Image 1 (cartoon, helix red, strand yellow):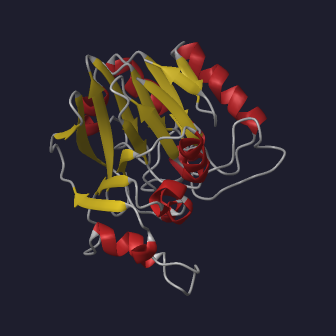
Image 2 (image 1 turned 135 degrees about the vertical axis):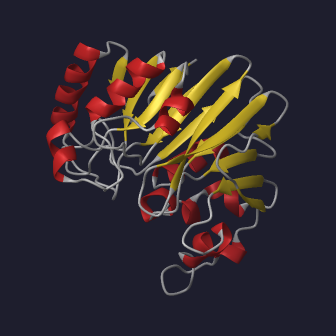
Length: 273
């Protein structure tokens, strides 16, 4: 599998000179399986660039799976600008949780009304298949790829995902917290033995203590999960929008001192598994 990061920031896009090396787009990760299945994790502003890249690959028909961790705005705001969703030649299977009494389709359509945009959700021309998933429900993508969602600790609810294909695996745990004094069992199960763990690391350990219940982790908690779950590599993800490139370089060095195979996720980075 090949994993490519298209958006790595949390909360809000932050373009500018202090974020240009790591990137300022909100969450979007592409996983290309050995069967050339395209699995997309979240649709923050980074998905716009992914859409442009997919169009340049000259695929006659794109069939992709889009997994939403949850529907906070920084994870859905790029969907209206995802170019493949506007072509009737393409099929997009959208999977994610029901939140706060609204269907997944209602929430996604709610940001695409004429008060905010010149086009509506109904005008997305691609063949859209929308399905709400449940904790632990096994899903199959193509012939050899499996996806398992796990519920995370985040206000309003969120899912992490484990993607497996022919003995390789990627675990995605964006927007997740941990109980005080311990690690969430669902995250450990999600990450167990994964070749790559992509884990929320919005806070420093000191900031984490100042923001209990925010549903985000410190880089140290991400490292502790990587160690206890025995993962191959750890991508620190969902960076605080106020964090500069230089500060993230310092965090990367601190994380590597504990877990040498840790790295800061950067836009455009490709990890082969």
